[in-house]
Length: 233
Ligand SMILES: Nc1ncnc2c1ncn2[C@@H]1O[C@H](COP(=O)(O)OP(=O)(O)OP(=O)(O)O)[C@@H](O)[C@H]1O
Ligand SMILES: [Mg+2]
Image 1 (cartoon, rainbow, N blue to C red):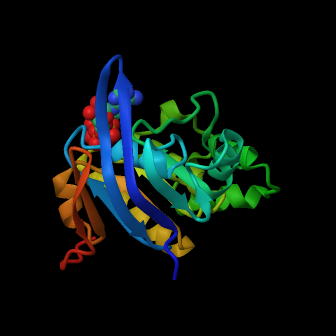
Image 2 (image 1 turned 135 degrees about the vertical axis):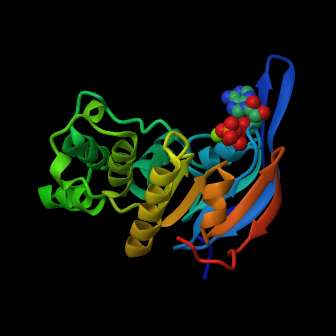
């Protein structure tokens, strides 16, 4: 079966004045539909850069990324923006919820961006799935960090994206809540057959998970372990 994400000799160089920062250097890898992948590596190793390229939020300096059948190099901004709203879901370290909207409205907002018809039940179901049924009318500032990230996960998954991209989704959470959020993402991805690419620099979280781990150092791919032997989560 053709991989859902194909990455071929992908490089990204940022220009800081006259100084060039090689954030990603000739990275090649394939990810298949339904896979759950953790990108690991020290700060500055290129994890966010790679996620931004997979997420069609930026374009590469060299090489190719193809997500589903969209070649990110060749797509216009408008095509990438529609593609993001319909086929991708995003979860970020700082939750990125809209403070003036309650839980239900934050999740609904993602459906409004996708410009497809939907029913109230689509929203209430996913809020139930992330365990926040009783919190639908709460605003983000009345929720804990873990609960906020659950809202972000519900918002990312409500339109049933093919690929979920999560940049350090557990970085602002304590160890126990991080494990719970990772388990929830694993469970929901499996239920919906969603492909997940997430980054984390937390070794204790990565060690506990049994998913494929891709390691970056200085923008280069230095490790790709299909699965650990233990199955702790
Ligand atoms: N917009 C930018 N302009 C210039 N340099 C950038 C930009 N974004 C990232 N970089 C540089 O590219 C390199 C990779 O950054 P990136 O954010 O991808 O790393 P990371 O692995 O996500 O790090 P962290 O774990 O701290 O989030 C770093 O050297 C960073 O300083
Ligand atoms: Mg980062």
